[in-house]
Amino acid sequence: MSNSVEIFNNEISMFTIRGELGGSPESTEFSAVRQFIGLMIDREEFLLPIEVTNEIIMMHQLTFVPRAPRFIEGVINLRGTILPAINLRKMLGVPTTQFNGQSRIIIARCENVTVGLIVDGITYVVALNHDQIQVQSLHNKSGSELISMISKRGDQVNGILDIAKILGETGISYHEEEVEEA
Image 1 (cartoon, rainbow, N blue to C red):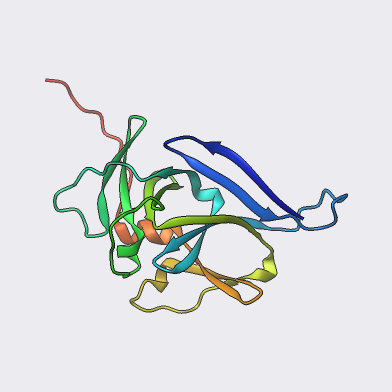
Image 2: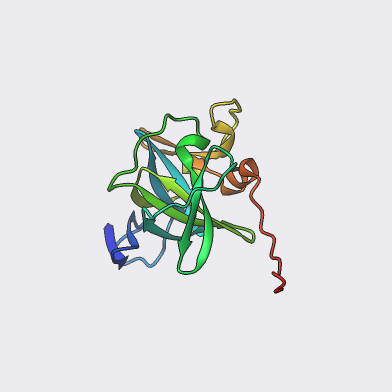
């Protein structure tokens, strides 16, 4: 049984859930262990655990940050909160292109750090069972260290991005400091 539910859509945010529910229509069981958001980088589809995702927004105006690491595209102002915007193309070693109408920013969090992840597009939300997820064992310099697991659904294989490893690579951490007034 396939469901598609639009949960939020306006000029800034867009998010639609599509997925397969396990069991019969009469069953209330959900056979999936975890849900993931499908995202596009170049012509490759990756997955990101839904539990680290706050929201998905349209491309925002980015403010340049001098001397920032090459993969920090800038910062965005999201309803008064300033967030670093990480270009996942650069993090994964993929050649960059111009942002377009399909480009999105995934607002993701890990521990007490929230960032924007710039992607080429969003595909769907998928629910995966234990037997569809394998621990990633490849390590090289092409970005695979940012992939902690692999999903396999039929003939389709996707890398599952690890937000903790992405943030570890960026060196971004949260420090709350009070500004003293003169």
